[in-house]
Image 1: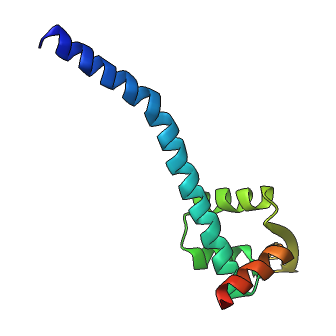
Image 2 (image 1 turned 90 degrees about the vertical axis):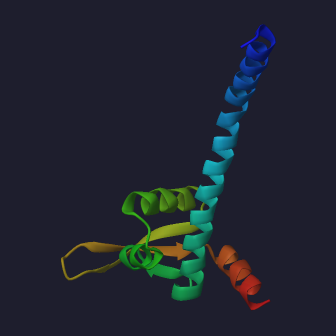
Length: 113
């Protein structure tokens, strides 16, 4: 390997290291938004904007951790709210997720077009 080849390889390594992290961040954010859109779509189309935690989890076919992270992000963005539902057969109070009314209307309007 010549000095010039080494310098070119070193430049490429530095370029790669400087640009790979932002690229991975973009990909990660895109995946996160995909899961959010997916959950919202299920909530709107299947449950008319209101569903229990377990129903939404089962319908989404997501891993529990991935589902919880996505729901937490939707709650932070105020796209959905979490309410207490009826007591289940095990005595626990169910978590119910409700889509923001404005978001529900715009999502429903988009589906109808």
